[in-house]
Image 1 (cartoon, rainbow, N blue to C red):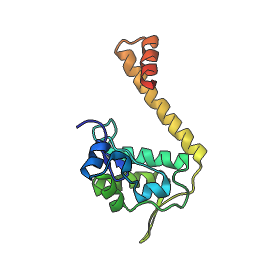
Image 2: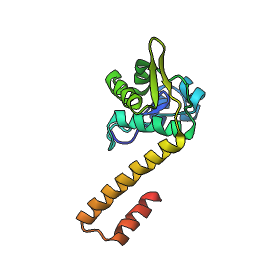
Image 3: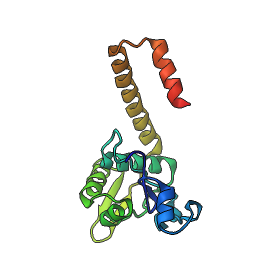
Image 4: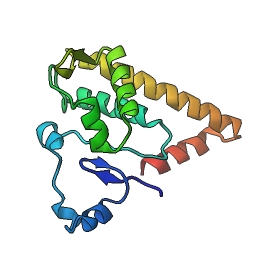
Length: 161
C-alpha cells in the first residue's frame, strides 16, 4: 500500500476511503481534539525514507518552530499519541525520548510531557543546517551517478514543481 493513510488526525492511507468506511463523505471527517487545540497534524508515511519515530520527531520540531506548539503546552501521552496515529507505544516513546534529549520537551512526573522554553531562531537554524547536510549528501550521490550540475538543478526544479 503506497502513500499515506489517515487515522484520526494523522494521515495513514487514503483519507477518502477511511471517511467512506466510516459512512461519511471525506469532507465531513472531523478533526481530532488535538488538531482543534493545536492546529498540528502528524503525517506518517509507513514506507517513507525516515523511520516512523523520526517522522514524529521532525514534525513536532516543525510544529514548535511554526508556533503550532508553544512553550509549556501539554503534549498527548505516549499511549494516547500512539493510539491516535496508529503506531506502537515503543515508537512514540522513542520519539519523545529524542525530543527530550534535544531539550525540546520535558517529562513531568505523573503529569505528562510539555514543550520546553526554546529559542525558535536557534532551532530553525539547526533545521536549516540539517537540510543543507541532506542536500550535500544528495549532490554527492548525484555526482557519483555521473550527473552534471545542470542535470542536478533540473532534477531539483522538477521536484519543487
